[in-house]
Image (cartoon, rainbow, N blue to C red; front, side):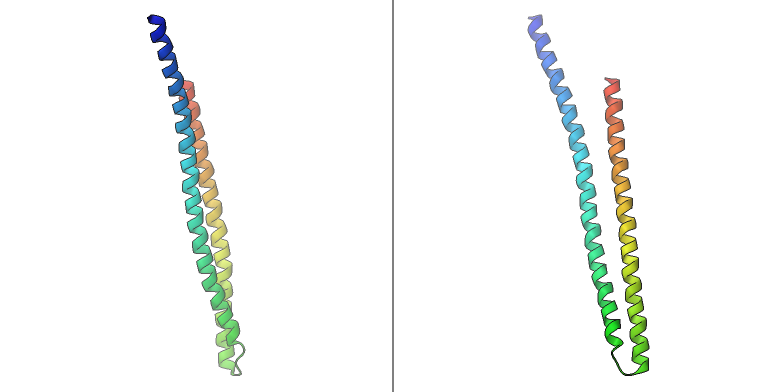
Length: 122
């Protein structure tokens, strides 16, 4: 009878270890999924605002086609604002994307460290 109880306890302990491993995999996957959602949102904002800046740039270039000097200066100003917007949007996107990647790596390192300390405690 004791052998039967002992084997059942050993099976339960093995199942607990498997459950802990599955939990750690799931938390890592949730962290990756969360960052992928943030990356998709970031990419959506980037393309949206980049489109707006390109339209401003094209409107300014179209304004350069006028015969009047005042309209040409206004068109040049608008084209420069659009170009500045395009450059700033690219810079903003790459800074935010690198920030997101660094946060994702830190989260994964924290999860690995937590798993290692939990394994040492057992």
